[in-house]
Length: 138
Image 1 (cartoon, helix red, strand yellow):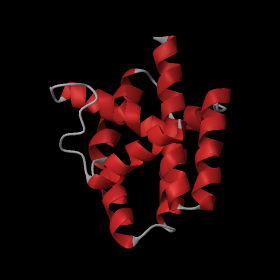
Image 2: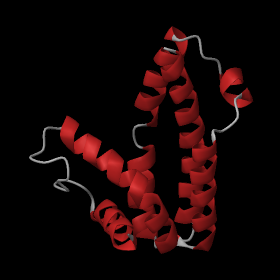
Image 3: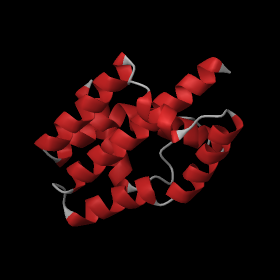
């Protein structure tokens, strides 16, 4: 349970910084792409908050504990990476963000029972482009 608590705290810190970086990068994006990505990121915030609130309550995690816990080194490095590329521009941010989004899309496609965990069926063209940019980077 201690490891899971730590993960939830670090994940919360990551999500907050990632959201800030997405907003910053979207301010440099073509309007239609910014709307697509911002909608995808923020459309289910209430449901995510509901799940986090329940987990936080069940594990006795407080907002104060999250705020007072430092970033682990990997989390810090990746969130700074996102902020840096968000400051450079939209395509640069998408390429920097793609590895994280690729993992999420694999998990989501598996949960939804799509044919393969790598399936892009049903993903918006912007998210497909994001994943594609990340793959070409490597």
